[in-house]
Each structure stands twice: as C-alpha cells, then as structure tokens.
Length: 241
Image (cartoon, rainbow, N blue to C red):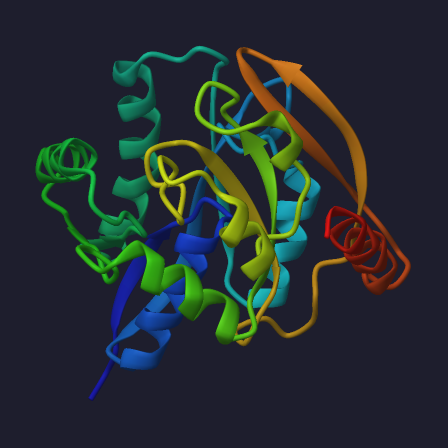
C-alpha cells in the first residue's frame, strides 16, 4: 500500500520533532518536505530565531527536503497566508493534500490553520493534539531527543532559561505557571539530536540578546563535537545544584 504524501509544518522545535516521529512511526505517510517560515533579512526561523544554516543541517540529518517560506519582519497574517499558501499550492499540484502540525492544545491556532488550508482545498493533521504536555515533555527526553531553549518570553519565564538544555533538571525548575512544552509561547526550542536524526546537529552557543521583547540564545554552526557544548551546559547544571 502506497504511503500518502504530506508536507510537514516544521518549526525546528521539540513538538515538531515528536509529531514527526509519530508520523514516521505510523508508516501511513511520506513526508515530502519540511515547510518552515523564516524571516527575510535575518535569515532565521521566525519566532525561534535559529539561523537558516542550522535549519538546513537539521533537515539534512532528518533526511527530508527543506522548503523555506520567507516573510517580512512584522509580517501581517494576510501576507503570511499569501506566501504560505503559494508554497502549499505547489505541493498540492503534485498530489499533496495534507499538512502536519505539532500543535498541542491551542484551539485558536488550530482553527486558524484549518481555515487557511480549507481555503486552498487542503487539510491538517495534528498527531499530538490533546495529549498531556507534562507526559509529552517526559516522553521527548526519555526517547533520547535533545534540544536547547533558543527563545524565551521574559514576561512568562526568567531570561536565564535562554540557552539551557531542555532536560529533566530544567523541567523541575519551571514555574507552575509555565507549560512544560511552552505551548503558550513561554519558550521555543531547537532540536539537535534524537532517534529520528542520522547524526547530531553540531553547534556552539552564541550571544544571548534581547530583541522585540524576547530573549534569544543564538546558536552558531560548529565543526567540532557537539559534546563540547553539552559539557559546558552540564557544568552549569552542576553549579546550579
């Protein structure tokens, strides 16, 4: 039985990674492309602030073609929809009718996506929808995924969390008001390793900066072993204890 071709709405973060794993495990779908929104001029993943060079490496290690959709900084929903739908229509002409998203429980976001896709005759799948976020966070870590917090909303979570590894220690230190998966926008992550990766995405920590009311931890491509970056983070965790 032939697999149904789908496009994946890819953010580069942990929820996307878990959703992709679910889709691959089902053996029902062929993910023909990772579709990622990036910001013109900055050449970074919109909202997450991750460099497109690392996004490209991430897609390569996942073994799935990457399609970047560039939008202007401060782009309106209308402009986003025009550009995103233009890209999706190209895949629709090739026989793709469904788009995968890693959303968890925000009804307004799901309704927005469904409405946008219905306008061009496509539909969405949400493999993680409605699942307990505390359980999902634990599942992500136990499965062997590794991620780093690249963007923090300081109005919801202390800026010191930017740049930290997403692990059990971090989860234990999150305020009770913060969703373990950051679904309310408290933080965003970049996944650099896991069971669906061929090899880890190598990086080294860059500057932590404040921009547009958010705290961004820059990640730089690194040719050396990613273990060096992890060792620095582990030492920080030990000091905190």
